[in-house]
Image 1 (cartoon, rainbow, N blue to C red):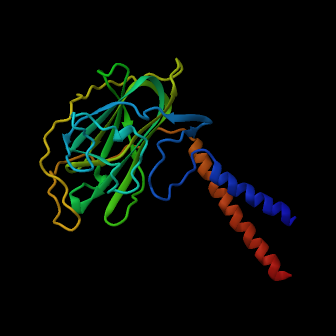
Image 2 (image 1 turned 180 degrees about the vertical axis):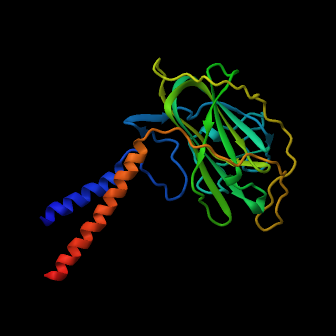
Image 3 (image 1 turned 90 degrees about the vertical axis):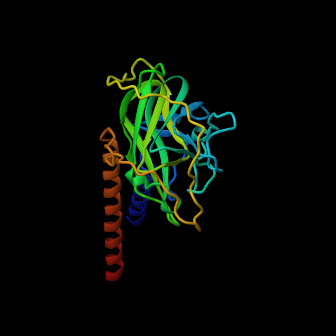
Length: 284
């Protein structure tokens, strides 16, 4: 009997950890190089090492994403996610609204888009909790369709740094070649390190976007005025602007809720069984 109970406990524990969609990142970052599995389908980061254009004024410090030729260095799609806010994997542009438009090279069925956003008051980098991040898609690179606002994670960070991940997970895939992520922040410095677009080869079964909108795709300017001060100096000034603070819930199927319910039931059962075993030992 005791072996049966122990076996059941081990099964529930392994199920809670390995169930699709159930994952925890202790550092608060995410993995842009490893495929994710949703509803039994593996989606890889199809934006990895792809070219992109980015709007916003150039930042000249070591956290810049602009090369001497004026083009992006590729930090947003190199698969390297910053481990901390002062990590040089971060690529900064200066604007209260910045867009990254990725050319995937061909159409893919897009399922999820994830990006990170840091804040640090001492350097004038705005709080990511006040940001709104919106995802658009396009088949031709000219006419873009909004597919939704990303949902932000709980806040992580240390030493004054704040980090939130923003994820848009679609109930049904959308077929697109171009993906645009627009960051609306409550300040000047857009402090992010990666945009991951998880998808698979496009097929005729993928849903096509129906709601159209066409934000402009501007080339980054070469001007660079204010820079964040060091943590030992006074706070850098940031341009205050009103930005949307609401984040819409992303469309989801009911599977994730079911998985979490199973995990909770498993934990509750584990606790109950442990209590019963302890009481039996006392009776003996």
